[in-house]
Length: 116
Image (cartoon, rainbow, N blue to C red):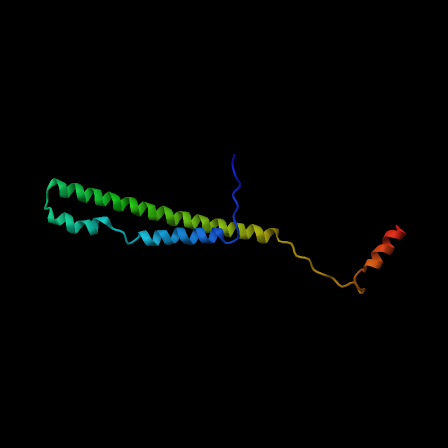
C-alpha cells in the first residue's frame, strides 16, 4: 500500500537549505591533499601510485556528489517558485462594493424566504 506524501508549508525550503548545506559541508573535503602527506612518505612506488589514484577517484566522486546536491537544491528551489506562482495565479480576491444599504440581517433573510 502506498502512503500519501504530505508536504507542510516550509518543508521544501528546509529541504533546499539542508541539501545546499550538505554540499557546503562536503566542499572542503579533499582526500588527495590530506592523503598526500602520508603517500609522500611512501615514495614513488606502486603503493603510492595506487593510493594517489584512489584519493583522486574519491575526490572526483565527492565533487560529483556536491554538484548533484547543488543541482537538486536548485531544482527544489525551482519547485518552490513554481508552487508560489501557481498559488498566486489561483488566488481569488473579492472586492466589496458598497451598494448604499446595510448588510442583510437574519430577519431580512427570513422575510425573503417567506416571500418566495
